[in-house]
Amino acid sequence: MNALENRASGQAQEVPAAAGQAAPVQASEVGVVRGVGKRYGTFTALEDVSFAVRENVIHGLLGRNGAGKSTLMRMLAGHALPTAGSVGVFGGNPFENDAITQRICFAAETQLYPDHFRVKDVLTAARLLYPTWDQPYAEELVDLFNLPKNRQIRKLSRGMRSAVGIVTGLASRAPLTMFDEPYLGLDATSRQLFYEQMLADYIANPRTIVLSTHLIDEVSELIEHVLVIDRGRLVIDEEAELLRGRAVTVSGPAGTVDEFTSGMTRLHEERLLGQSRVTVLGDAQAPQHARALGLDVQPVSLQELVVRSTSQANPEKAGEER
Amino acid sequence: MDEGRPIFQQIAEQLENAIIDGSLPEGTQAPSTTELAAFHRINPATAAKGVNQLVADGILHKRRGIGMFVSDGARGQLRERRRLAFAEQFVVPLVEEARKLGLDADELKNMIDKAGPEVGQVGITQEGKR
Image (cartoon, rainbow over all chains, first blue to last red; front, top):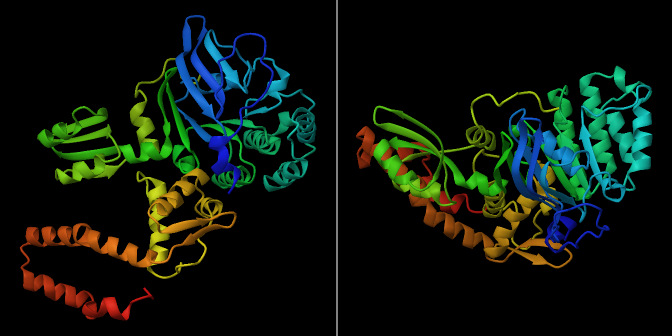
C-alpha cells in the first residue's frame, strides 16, 4: 500500500565501499554500529555499543545528559571516528565520505556556521549539499517557524537556531536524518509543530530518522524503535510497542510480588510493611498473570521506563555532551 | 492514547468500537494506516500493526490497491467476543467490590435498575445506534 509497509522488502543500498573498515550492512538496515567505543583521554564516552539503524524507521535515542548520544550520532554522521569497533552507513564508512554523507543530514543546535552566514545562506548551502533537498518545503517551514531569512545565524536566539536545524533536517529529505535534541530553546507550540511536521513528512516521504531527546513523553508515540544509552552503554534496543507491553509496576504482598517477579528484570523496587512495589520488564502476558495473582498492576510510560533503566547517580562529567 | 498500553491495541479497539456501534458499517472502507497515524499523531507502523491485527482476526480484509474494508459478519463477531469478556471485565469486579462493601444481591439489583431503568431492554432499544 505504501512504502512504509513495504520497507521489509526494501532493497539494499548500493554505495561503493569506502576506504577503511565499515561494518557490513543488512538489506533492511541503513546503519550498523558494532562494538563501538570512544575515549577522550581517560574519559570513556562510549563502550562496546552495538545496534542496527533500521531503514525507514523512526528511532528514539534516549538517555541522560552526557550518556553518549551526541557522540554516537556524530559517528553515524561521519563527523567523528570511534576509538574501537566500527560504524557502517549505507554500506560504507561514513567518515569524510561524500558519497555517503550527502545522504545523511545531522541537525543539531550546536551546528557551527561561518560568522557571516544568514538563515538563507544556510538553506542555500543545504540545497547544494543534499541531492534530495526540497526547496519549496524549506520555504514553507521557514514561514511556519517564523524564521527571519536575512538575519545572521549568530544573532539568532537558541530556539531559532534549533528551528534552522529542524528546517534543514526536514527539507533535506536525507535518507538518514538525525536530530540531536532539536527542541532546545523552543516553546511547547514550536515543539508540537516540529513533531507534526516530522510525522507528516515521514508519512509522505518515508526515511530513516534518529531523534535524540529528553522529552520522552512528547515523542513516545512517534518513535517506533527505542535505543537507550546509559553512561556510554546501550541498555535498551527494542521496539517501542514491545516495551510498552512488557514493562509494568506491580504491587501487593511482598511474598506474592517476589514470586511473580522472580526471573524477570527488576528495574526498580520499594518495600513498606510487608508490601512491595516492583517495576519489571516481563513478557507480553505479564500484566494478565500479575492480575490473576491479585496484584495491582500499573502501566509504565516510556519516560518512566527510561528513568528506571538509567542510573540515578549523576553521570560522570554531566553536561560534557556537546 | 493511554500510557503504558501498546498503542496498536488501542487502535484496534477503537476500530472495533466503531464497528460495534455502527459508525463503521460492514462493507465500508476503514481508515488507512496513514490516516490513522496522522489523526492520532502516532507512528504509522504502529497504526499498521493495529489494522493488521483486525485483518488477522477476519474483522477487516484487504482489497488490493484500494484499502481495508469491514468484513461481513464483523459486527456480530465482535459483539460475541465482547459479551464473552463482559463477565470477567465488568461483572466480576462489580461483585467483588459489592462483597467488600457488604451489599447483598437485592441491593445490587436495585442499584442496576436505578442506573438504567431500561437495562433489560438495552439489547433491543439501543441496537445499532449506541
